[in-house]
Image (cartoon, rainbow, N blue to C red; front, side, top):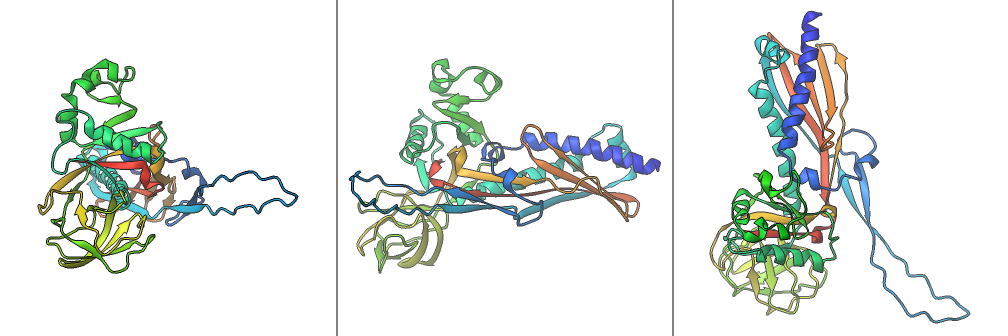
Length: 389
């Protein structure tokens, strides 16, 4: 009984320690839209809630008549948030470690386990954005904010052109971009900034600047670009609304994650979802679907790299909250089953994350495992723009 009491006390202590560490490692999960979380029924893997995206409605001239005009039907689309991700970070602890926890000593294994869960969640949300966000600003291979805020303003214009709400915008940057931005007078000058507080320059944070909350994250991903030159052209049938594009001519490669533009009237930047084949003949799958049909003579330009040169771009991002939806589900709590298995769950009041710690007794040691059940989706990819560097 005494051993069980020690284990239970240690369980509560470790859960509290774990949630504090998890909160410090987050960026995207703190800004994603989580209002749909309450609509998910059940805490099982693959539980789903559908988010309705309203269809556009056209106006028409009012013409009084004895017969009313037909009502124009609209069909909203749905985007699903599915709890498809269930990850754990297990580690073993002997009886000595168990007593240390009960005495308030934090074992290194617990910190590392929680960090692993945090990184997995954060990287998952980045991967969702990498597969859908097609807006792009900045200069490939050049850290932004070296001389001013022009790169930010270009990304901000993309969101404005796409009718993004001016509220709840976030500029997530890596350590190099933050180092450059912190040296700008425009960042340091109070006339550019909103208020004071924990998200202010005096605390080492950039905070609110020009309508966005600036957040530094060490988890900002990089993208290795292709080497395609600008002499390749489209070929075959590339109809409006299609996602497949055929190319001919040119040299080098186009890789998934690259951004391309066409030389015609269509000014849209397209994200390459997949690429097969090599020059001079290759086939792409792009997002969004083609805005207009492409002739067999339109030159394709790689926007994510200097033409013909491979590079690595940091994927800083300007994002409005409604671009990304995220949901977590609380897992079973306070369970005791044969084999001396104990579980405990706590909800972090700051971020709302649900993290479970499960304890099971083995031979002369105890296995501890943090786990989390979650899912997400990109609802409106046009409400974000990459700021490469």
